[in-house]
Image (tube, rainbow, N blue to C red):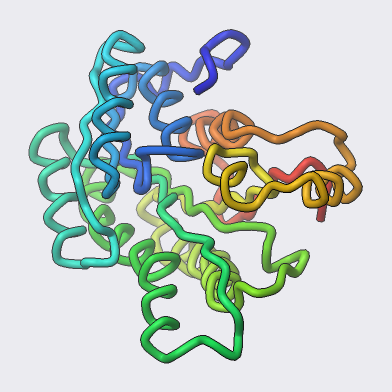
Length: 258
């Protein structure tokens, strides 16, 4: 995880209640650390208990508030709602939500069953809607909030052999735009971030070969690896009051691939 050196400071994030889904590793863990260093009251959901507990331990002295980990399978809507209620009970109303949880497992079109399709929608799209639904009332009562949905450039390239994942990631952009207009009058902002080839530990382990790394460098305008901190820095800005006039937008972090 990146350190704080060179990172911007956002005073408006101090003591704000932030919830990150899928925050135990990768981009999510980077965002949890970034919010903790800003002094936010940060909670995160994940199913990976060991990695999440280790993350909390690593961030105990990063800021004034130790992050709160709640184990939750976001595809279980009842459990998701219970987790959000627990965070609100312990930290207060969530006014910054980062919908990050996802799974980009490879799948081939001819092999997809109705059950697998539904499972991919549940892990990549459905929980984003129900997470937003869970915070709307609290944000409205608090006078507003910021919701950042994590999509992907995969549907813009377009990528292949992940049809269900890519469909879900495209749907997130539509969800972002409609809810931004539905709740804008309550001063609730909804934006979307589309990462490109971000070199997380999982990506390196599962997908990055010398051939794929060369393809990435050929496609990107910027000839360097992109890391989770590149995404986290944008998310901090969109969560803060510095972006208070920005909503219903999609922001690409891909080094100029698209």
